[in-house]
Image (cartoon, rainbow, N blue to C red):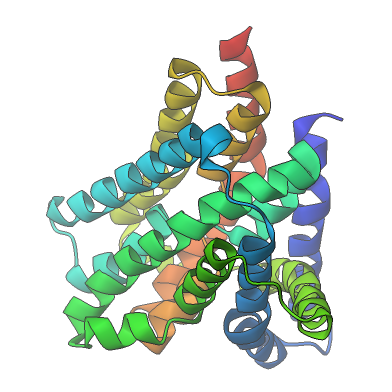
Length: 301
């Protein structure tokens, strides 16, 4: 199936969330609760389960993980550097920088399964095991510094970092969860993907981007141009196996994390500006992600 068609079910769920929020009794107040349920319960369960149960095989996937870390580090460096653009408002930068390098893990896992089946999910889970803590550390830092929060305390109670580190520790320790725990986590995680994607659609907003459109353009350019380009270069330069190339480029071309909005709101950031960035990134990725995969195929030809 064409890569663009592989993504249609995921973006259809986003569109469904948008429609339900705007045109049904399930208004914004309902979806704010759904966002928190996904962020604090369902998605941590999915992260923990995905990382804990999939073997970490760096012998065959070390290059893929290294490339994923390089892409994330490049995005973080560019996002931090955007602070020095002329007339950048510090509140906008502290709040929005995370959208330039964080990635929507709901979409990442869904797309990985469509691109490479269970093996693709395992590779993506391994990327997430290392990149989720890195990106969340980098997201919390400017918000904590700007808002006067204690960085260590914010990191210690971040549910995505807790779940990722816990899953990684369980994996490395060879911990076998009791069947009832494993099945419960699996069912919670299964609910995370559709609800998370629909919550992204319910939160789509663009108006606040008018407050600082140049900075927004910089963040979106990093997310949807610089990182996919770097991923294609790394994938072909090493070279990675064909299936891993697609996983890496899709990973680099993801829409930004919808949970960026929740983090900004909870830490006193400019939540509406971040919501606009999440919205724009989601819309751009609907075209940009298939385009990045097509560019990879063209470069391989």
